[in-house]
Length: 143
Image 1 (cartoon, one colour):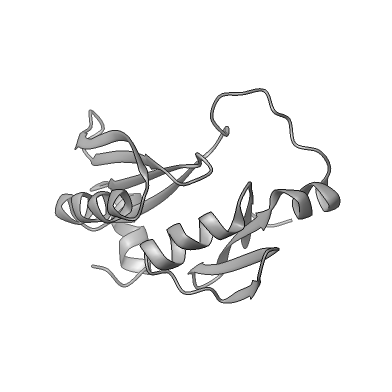
Image 2 (cartoon, helix red, strand yellow; image 1 turned 120 degrees about the vertical axis):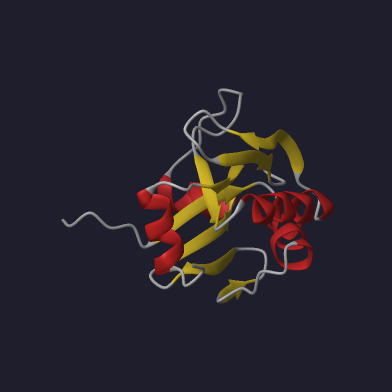
């Protein structure tokens, strides 16, 4: 198996609330949707983010643990500069995101902050001036 991820699936409690946040609030366009069941968003040329109703997810994958706390992962959205980070953070909060950590200068040389979507999934919005960050922005056609 080669090192590649093509689909990331998040089990969500209320697909309609997730739709309001991602589609109506952030302006994302679903690539595929079955109302009340699942939505797919193309987030990169070869990567899809899937939001699947919790019931459908559990029926297919198995029961979710409810140990409390936050989901044990973050998703990241890199920007080519700090102003872009601030803009995305403002847009996310205006769309209904919970601000977790305001964007700030980081010890590793970048600039980032965190918000939570309606299900509590944490998104990091970051500017990474290092070689990998620049490579990602170049691949995305942003620099």
